[in-house]
Length: 77
Image (cartoon, rainbow, N blue to C red; front, side, top):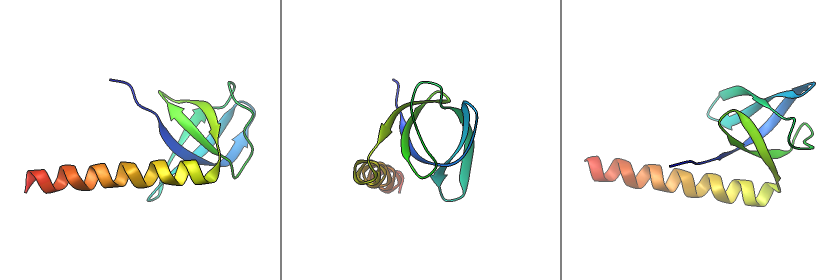
C-alpha cells in the first residue's frame, strides 16, 4: 500500500526542500517535480513532493489522518 502525506515547505535549497509534517517532524524532500514555494503545502511520497496542495485541502487531509490514528489507538485499548 502506498500513501502520501501533506507537509508545509519551510525551506528550499535548489531542488531540495525542508518540509514540516507537524509536531516538530521535519524532513528533506526532493521538490524537482513540483513548483513549490516556502509556505506551500505539498503532498510527499517516498521522499518526493508529488503535488502542490492548497492550504485548505492539506489541513483537511491532516485532520483525517489524525482521526484515523486516533481510531486506531482506541482499537488497541
